[in-house]
Length: 381
Image (cartoon, rainbow, N blue to C red; front, top):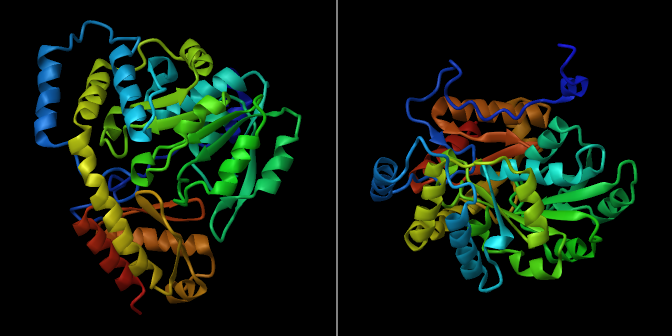
């Protein structure tokens, strides 16, 4: 290790995106990418053409982008109010990031950096909270979830909140959680409301559009709460890395202090404005995805080789039963899940092995049908 590199980075494992088909391994010619919880549909051609025209005729590549993000913040505030049936969110409640990841990093810099605090997460959950914390030298306290429904162990969480070395400064929850797909239940929400105001509560609503259950209406009552959202899922802009935080202005002003200047390219800003202006059309695909989720869930649940949990997102979480392990000739859950993932990959369906299970993105009807057929063939012995 180079002596000028922080020694604690030896313990950090970088986030590794799913390699897809670019590993040299044999894969089908056509890959169904059901591994990253993306929307299965690209932007419509007419919107791509509008973006191309904006790039060609409006954006000056020799000029810095709008560092204030003013127009997009205003459009986001309007959308948030509309989707939550409120009128209290404005531009002062919005901060934009290069994906939600940058916002998570900014939140940690503003709260915990310099041994000022730890973060609390309930495993399994989105891995980037812990990864980003580690890169900043911030401690992560992990508690378990109840495996029957993956709800948070609130008793363990309350015990963790009492620690003081260093104290918990941020609690991260995902609503609905990834990879387990369960939305926060009333008991969990009631618990979040009891967390003292000297601890930040970050509620990640990356999959809001597929769940239609938001806590943004509670922000005015809880000054320590932050809602995270993204354009990567329902709005189909995963490649352009655009996320946003919603909070009271006292939090937003500090996020703006630690945000890098010009953190979003002009093209991403324009794309965000465009998809919001076209949201009535773009979000018409959500009922189809929810319908596909409802269709394939009972089919997977009927397979005795799999344990499947309910889903509030655009993905489904699975583990193997003992029967499934026997069919695969494996004794450990990890080995069995890896085998399924590899077999599906060679057949053309990419899924994600994470959080002690398999996360299956709900794709197009054709992609979902192929996935169901391939899973059935694996356990047909």
